[in-house]
Structure formats: C-alpha cells, structure tokens
Amino acid sequence: VHTSRGISSASLLLQAAEAVLPKQKRALTASEYKHAVVACKRRSKHQNDEE
Image (cartoon, rainbow, N blue to C red; front, side, top):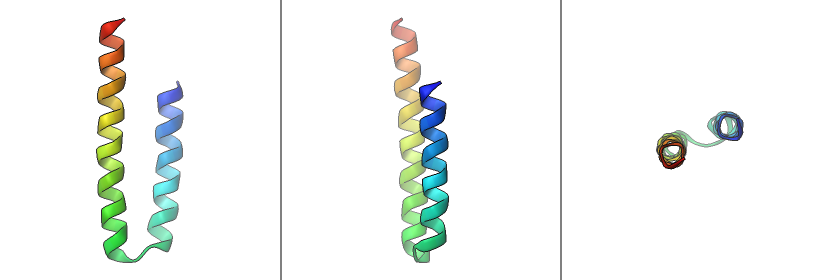
C-alpha cells in the first residue's frame, strides 16, 4: 500500500517537473524517475521474498 502511494506521488511530481522544466531536463527527470520506480519495485519484491 505504501509503495503504490509513493509511486503515485512520484508520478505527480514527475508531471509537475515536465510542465516546468526545459526539454533536456524533462528527459533526464523522466529517465531518473523510471529507474527509481524499477529500483523500488525490485526492493519491494526482494522484501516480499524474504518474508
């Protein structure tokens, strides 16, 4: 539950950044966001596997 709320919040933050930042920064922000989401999902999956 906490993970999905965090990802949702991050998505809103990304949308706000895309609206304000120049094109090059937008691409970098989107790329970093995608990497963070993947890392978050991997950590979540790893924690679930340990339990």
